[in-house]
Length: 323
Figure: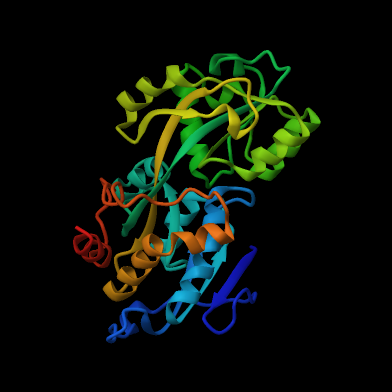
């Protein structure tokens, strides 16, 4: 599994670092950025996805700003895998779609029992992409019946959301020829004509979809009719969203389903480390943007809205200080 390792002393060095032993983390000194030796592992997502771009930039900036801290990122299938990694101690932080995180907190869907995870912050919002070639006749979800469709990797949040959208439109997995490939594989398959459509849930822009749009003219299918049925069945994690035409050089703005995102951590993370990470996330956004230009970043005004996940006490302390 690819990884990126960064530290205050050694930036961008590849290697393996065990997740931090939070019970051993020292208290913050007079300088909030001075931490006892701490190694962080960030579970991100698919190459070409915003989770990975933002996660790698965040890991680099954390290592630059926090003395005594090193960080690495690991590529994953994203939400479902990330939540399990954090709960089981395989990662210290992980990115997740809000709908998948909600399932994890309650022991629903992909999770047989509730997972011990908390939110560090709500991050940016993601948007459901249902991508087809520009010359495709597919203009609605119901027209995916009998088609070859990428639903996202099996341990991804995209898979959770895509199956729910199919269901709210009267389709089951038996009604499509479903692919469980990665985002990169799905973009290549659509370009080659081996897929008729694929789903992906991402912040804007998604680099893999953007690269595809530069090689092959694409469209995004309007998903506005799926929003209300999704919200009625699964909850307020699903709201209306719009993908601007300029994002992928589309003919027009595309209505779709939007899903909030969380950065999740174990409840065992020390309050000092959670506080310090939150402070970097919100006070070093210019530095993050220089590494990953245009990547969507958390908004302080929305950061505390992580229901049904509880905010980690260290994060709550930071947000209270900021008022």
